[in-house]
Image (tube, rainbow, N blue to C red; front, top):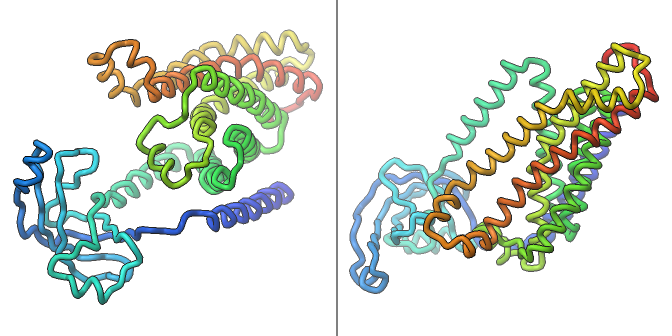
Length: 381
């Protein structure tokens, strides 16, 4: 156990080094964000000139905003807020709203205070919903601990390890120039090994689960690469990718898109592999004389219902996320709709997830049957 903990600490040390190295290569920060609150709405008027140009409603709000964090904490400024009939970017506020403020360059307090009557140096970019998000995350964590108990605590630890690896290792690695697909497969395998050992210890079950997920993810990476290559998708399928393109034009966007596909299947694949491994392990415990063929066929049979349910779960998760696309389909010619980058990406992700789940079952059954036949268990692991 102590060796395992030492191994985790060693990995975290190396990953922190990678994160620090990646952060040194980030573009120089050109804007600074702080939290604030709207203390009053002084006016709300229509800009007639802009309305004539754009033929849409153009509103200008004059606001008093109090900064709550950073260098300007507790200082109050009068700013303009433009509402341009673009719901994707407009932030229509009222008195008492908490907001996120942006300054375009490193701010100078004296300079801004001179222009305090109507400063252009501070802008509202969003309403501040961080408090709501923290409450939701807290409710999720608390529910998991209450309902899951000790196993819920281990699941929470496993989730934390996986998130750490993706956010603080994979992303910095990609920014440093790692190829997204093999890097994602490697990180996903490490996450699977660690989470399997956390939940089950170092056992035949955790070993077979890790090997099965590794084999499945490698196939998923190859399959997604082939699909995106044949479909000639450039990988830029959303506004987020367009924003990234401006900051990091040399990134492998097709590989990053494929990386997202692989990560989205990870949870379902681990669930399938873990359940099939556990079933075959229990069969071997109950029948020590069971041969490879019997263990393999029993593992397949026991996972049929779970495989179908997990495939449905994954497909419906993507389908729910694609509701706006389905609405768009009713007003767009089919040949145009089916060739949208985002449609190809969502369809590929859903199919890849289903295929990964389907192939994970026989892969896990084969690997688990082999190891359980070779290493006979005398008690549940």
